[in-house]
Image (cartoon, rainbow, N blue to C red; front, side, top):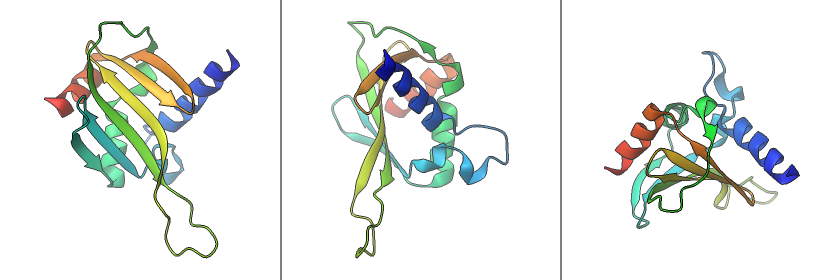
Length: 139
């Protein structure tokens, strides 16, 4: 139970990037520096590295309106989106060596999304506009 609550809080903090104008770089969404969207077969559909486009992607998800949901057993996977952050530059390095996965989103038919953070996965019901936005990335 405690792990689920901590996971939910971390997800909320990470995805709360859409706020009032002026949130600027202090919001949580700018932590993601790369978003990769892949279809159910694993083919890359979209790769976003531009900060404004990352912010647009996160805002389109309307995370503040998600409702807890069960993942239907027969739900077909539409796509996955993974949010990454560059690894920290360590002493003796001039550039970061790779990416760290922050969050994995699995989008299913019927407007359901499974959010994986650390070792916890939780399912949520999406709003209609958010579901249509994500389905539009696939079709």
